[in-house]
Every structure is written in C-alpha cells, then in structure tokens.
Image 1: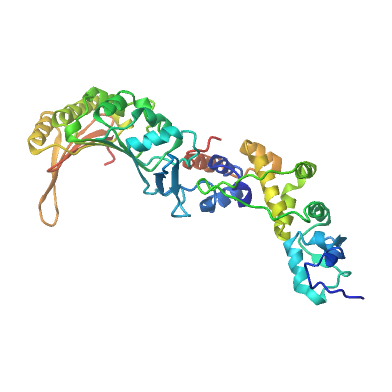
Image 2 (image 1 turned 90 degrees about the horizontal axis):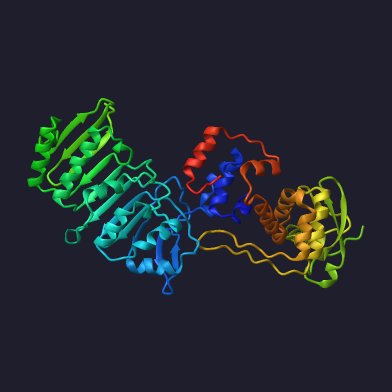
Length: 284
Length: 178
C-alpha cells in the first residue's frame, strides 16, 4: 500500500484516507514515509531556489512543529523567481508579522499560496504594513492561525488608523475558526486605548467580535496609560477583581469584567506592563 | 533421478537449462533458469540449494497461484536481461519519481489491468523490483484523480468509515480537497 501511495502527492494521499478504515489506519500510522511530512528548515540556495532539509523523518501532522520561517526582502525576492516551485504545504499555527524591515508585500499572496508554515515571521516596513492592513485579502491563509502577532516597532509606527486595524482583524473572508489571540506589540498608547474602546463599543453593540479574536494583547501600555484604561473600566461600571499571588500576597493583575445579555464577557486584564482584552463566552 | 548442479550460478549454460516451478495450486511450470532468476526469491533458492537442487522435481512457490505466476513469467521472459531499475525519490516532497515504461510494459499492464493487486503481491513475494514498482505505479495511476467512491468501486472495497470519521479526516487534512 505504501509503495503505491508514495507515487502520489500529499493531497492524493490524504484523499485515500477516506477510502476505508484499513487505508486510513495505514496512512495515519505511516505518515513519516509518505509525501506528507513537514520541512524543518527553509533556506534559499545561491541560485534563488528554495531548499529545505527534513531533520525529523517522523512528524505526524496533528502535532504542531515549531517551524519558524523568517521572511526578509531578499528571501521574498528570490521566491519571486521560483513561484512555480513545488513545496510541501502545511498549515499556519502562528503568524508573526514583524514590521520593521523593507520587503516585498506584493509577493505575499503567491508565497502563502505555495507555502504554509507553523510559525511565519514576516518583516514589513511601515508603508507595507499599511498596505497589508488595508488589503486583508493579501494574506490568503487557508486555515486561520491560532495566534496572529502584529509587532509595530517604535520608530516605524504604521500610519494605519485604528479603524483599519479593526477592518483587518475582522476581515470577513479570513477563516475565523481557531483564531484566539491578536497580539499588538508596540502599538502606540493612543491607538491602543482607542482600539480598546472600539472593541468595547462593538461588544456593547452585540457585534460578534469574538468570532474573529477572543483575546487582544497590548504590550506597550505604560502605567500612565494603564490608569486611563482603569478609568475607562470604572466608567463602564465593570466588575473589578484584584488577583494576587496566593503565597506572597503580591499583586499579579487587575481584572475587569462586564457580561452581556447573551452571556458573552468583555474582560480586561491589566498588569504592570501590558493590557489584555478578552471577548469570549462566559463559561463560569 | 538425475540431480544437476546449480552452482556456478552465473554460467550462461545453466541459464539455458530448465527448472520446474510448482505454484500453490500444484501447477508445474517448466522455466529456463535464466528467466526464473529475474525473481530474486527464486534466484536465492537456486543459489542456496546449490548441489542439492533437483531441477526436475521443482521449486515450490506456496504463495503464488498458477494464473498469476503465468503472467509474472511473461514479465520475467521480457526482462531477463534488463538492468536493475533505479528507484528515485524527491528529497523534498518524498514523492517517488515515476518510471517511464516501454510500449511492451504499457501493453502488459493494459492486458492485466484487473490483476494489478495480485501482480503486486506476487512481485513483492518473488522479489522482482521492476514488476513490483511498475505495478505499484500503475495502481497509483488508477487512484490518482479519482474520488474515494470511485476508488472503492474500482477495487471492490467496502465503505466502512462513518460520516463522523470522514469529517474528522477532512478536518485534520487541510489539503484534502475531496
């Protein structure tokens, strides 16, 4: 059976799992020998061809590999020359968008069509980030990442507005299953605050924002602004809880809650150096 | 009964001699040793038996039926002087590279299309790499592009997966478009 399947590509092999239990078991337990494995490291040859080596032969697909792919301008330019190359396609688990280096945003759609990684790091300049955020369709991800991190470096703050960021994260054509967290690093304080207020507004208007992300992390708020977040939470009459370290009775974080009629919860967690916003069903 | 030596296995003279091979349905096939040796399993038997090989009383093949062995012999006759095939695999995708078949080989598989599984099993047991890998490729060719339903129908396989199991397979296989 395996000697037959090995002539087929990954999609054809996966199709054969639907034939019967015996074939399904056979494919499932022999993935490491079939054309479905995951590449472990990606590199570009001097002639611009993408190459990668498989270090581990056995890598069941339902386990998450920590494959990190760092896309630079140079890599994407080389990729452009080889867009027809056949690559193993795997799903995105985490997508990190680091925005601090010039690259080739226009190549991203082609790249994502050909290559999916568990951890993808994309370096974009501020104007390119604007471009990406204004055109969410440029990230044609087959399966939503569990976590999308957008890192905005201090010196290259993107010019995009809070509304545009919201449009991006709520883009209706994005797959929305399993998308749990959006992490915004170094988003400036004013924008962070405005975004928190917008998310709360959408929550109050019964907008299903949790469909897109259930957690938003803002990692750049300083105390001055956290006071503003606390003032905002108090004004919205949110229930306040101070969570302390049980053993040392030290401060851990402050949690603010407000529950909607449909039992969805808007939750703010404030620590010394970051603010997390959760919009999720209240399971308590 | 005269017992002829099978030592000196590479001698052209020995290759021209006949050996009797008996399949599991007690059919006897008189085959030139040079043809039978395309099968590594039979070749090993000939080498192992050496002096004690009785060419006339036969080599037993308990795992192969007469009708299939007949087809296998046709292949062996055609490939008795063929070089070893080269099996290659794409190091990136792990996909096996497809072999290019001759007109004769294409016609052979067209003729025995409904016996591909049996041929593959026999070729595997008899260790005939060319027949084994080419048959596997032919089976892959038949699977390629067909839906699971068509594959089941073609090979007479029972659909014993529940809808839940199928949904789970589709869910975990991002690239499965069937």
